Image (cartoon, rainbow, N blue to C red):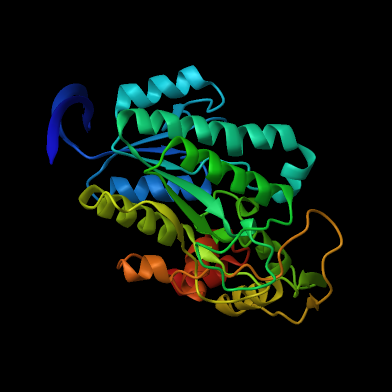
Length: 334
């Protein structure tokens, strides 16, 4: 399962520092992760790397120094990276995932979410790599949940439409590919704005100021490490069984509005929540959102695939570094 390569290592003892060439084990199973600098991509890269895969991550704006900088809109660059690395599996996390940004920049979003995805699927098919394309629950209109994989999509906003068109582009160019639809994500963020869940933490913490929170849209917050585990399990099952392909759903199973998430966050950190105000009207600003796009995950569960982190545990792990009251952090975590 492993090969050997030479790698430079720094050896340091007080008064002496030297550079030596050492042999290191390189796992023979190779995975390429796009969008490896993003919230989900980082978790996917870490999950495969920690489970005896040779993981290669690429990103764009935040790529250096850990990951390779690749513009997915440059078909020649994509071709070279795929052919040089020869991955067994490609997990395609890169996307424009912010609905309001997609509405304002439709052409750029379509190039990344649709065109680049179709091209990557073509390159994967050419070398026999298994491609997992990350899609969204926003391909559904949210009027008749829960949604199974074979239910007919009907996206309400342009983001959902580009993800659905991306699914079609992937499956048309690669018959053996998989589409994994997921809902709103959270996890170990580099900044609070990285997730629609964690961004609420400041409003929760500043209890001297009342905050309006959406209490209309039903969400299923899902930890990125759970999605990463599903991707790895799916990849490993596919390497044993070529019939593993097509569309799959994965989601957390705790139904919450943003108001309920905010209250749960407050409770997890023993913070007040009386300043949080539930707004039950349908949002009027920004892109349209589905009311309840709950995903039925029984197809993956039947395959023995899946992992779910309870929201209270996952959100505490994710947010405690951003806690303003350091006294709480010291007493609980030390």
